[in-house]
Length: 384
Image: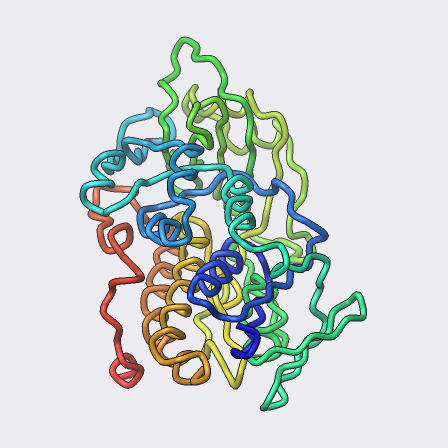
């Protein structure tokens, strides 16, 4: 491994950690650089669809994910006021049979911890905030805020919506504010009271201009998470997130179904986050640098597929390195983009429109996708 090309993964979030784990499994020489000082159980809830579980199977953490997560039988969409079912999408055993893996909802931090543990500790460096990246043609120089300098032959930018690697490729350009805020909260499951519906394991409450997505994040169904999409015309992008309150939530969801009111009343702590997007990028790589996930195609969370796209990206990139050889990185990058751009753009567009599973539809194209068996498209054909 020591003599093979050195691959640096910048960012150890879900996408970066999964990418590194897959590359290491293939025997590639990988190091991961993460700006956080160490791992902590951050974040809230996350959907993990069958398309992602197939990647986690390859990494070796599928069984533990199944033990930890909640496995909803259905995705429900409900009317904000009446609670009437607008859509009922089968998951549970149906997902296992038809898509080849479970559909889970879990705590993002628990998921992230499993991915971090899948990486050898000597391959992961915390406290590495990238300040400068220089592709010198024959080598890439990485400079970090702690004064250290590292060299790599290939650099994978998994460093999020404000990616330093993306800036090196395309210049400094702030992401677009999507016009919506997301309120997020995790709290113990409240007791059912008169007038309430039973808590669905996975449900999205819809009105004409806002929504609330609610699901369990543990297999014991003792912890609930909600995330909202609420229109707010203007927002200072310097405030990526701010604390919110029960009072703000009551005002925002005034008149909604008693089940939603119970969720607001049970809220312990809630934050609000600006939702950011970018237009599809003109390129995903240049020279020895390549992007994935939010660094490449950030999207609103309205399909619950943002992290999934990053993980699929990493799996496809590893597949392309294996296909053409890591020394032929330019060919691998072209093959990677040819086999990821259309799918990521489609998910980005549907997430923006916020129409996913509002009515009964067939999600097979999304959930049934297998990044390891999907026929590869040649770059020339993809561009045609």
